[in-house]
Image (cartoon, rainbow, N blue to C red):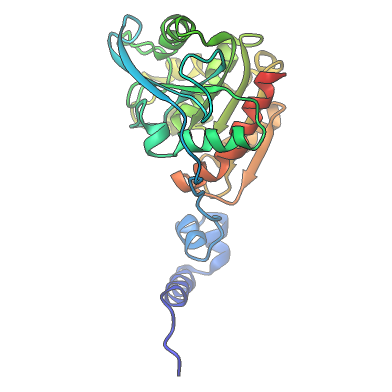
Amino acid sequence: MPRPSRRSLLITAAAAGVALAGGAGLVETGVVPGRTRLHGVIGLTGEDGIVPDAASGPVESGSFESVARRATVGWTVIYPHGQTADARLPVVLVLHGRGGDHKSAINDLGADRFLSAAVQAGTPPFVLAAVDGGQDNYWHRRASGDDPQRMLTAELLPLLAKRGLRTERYGVLGWSMGGYGALLLAADVGAPQVAAAGAMSPALWHQASQTAAGAYDGPADFQAHQVFGRAAALKDVALRIDCGRDDPFAPATRDLREEVRADGGLQAGAHTGGYWRRMLPDQLQFLGRKLAT
């Protein structure tokens, strides 16, 4: 008799756990926790994205003293393969997730090689500009005076312009905390400066009581930095919003997508780097084409 595979054992164990909890229907509806884990075991959260075998272009890094953030801020500019570090290209600002920094786009997602692959496939060339926004300040001004959004618009963009990059209209891309930050920046600045915004698994909540600890300074801060109810501010910004169906932010993301006109959608996936890597090619193609329009 053939020995059962590890996968079949995991599936059997997961099914047994569900049965003991009251059936798969309870897990699917969220009455019993474990839906995401079960879906991951049986393959319903989709395949992890694979970093392409594409050569990286030039990567330039540095730091500056940010008045807006009251801190030394690191930055990284990623060029597609075949471009030089003095190329006059449009910019997509990259906003990292909670706990990340300006190196996360490359270290966690392989964005340097995804960018090269996108351009090689025909997407008009642009650069990705990542910066330290703070570990958990959610890309908005805090009571401490730390203001990462002002750092982006008043400090990083002028720095990029001095490097010869085109910043008169730009895109923004983020995931998780950074996905929320990208949408907030798009709503606060608006078109034509923000031409396009891409968000993967944006950290969205309807009520202050639902938010992660430390994400806001209180209910008033939460209300002051909402993206819900701001469809008018976003109507002229090209939007792509993606979220995995097994992501805890999926319900709020679905609600926001119903308010605004956005490409993308809810796909098989969870709140993981594997999902963000899977969605990155479509996000980069979308942003590159909108910037070139």
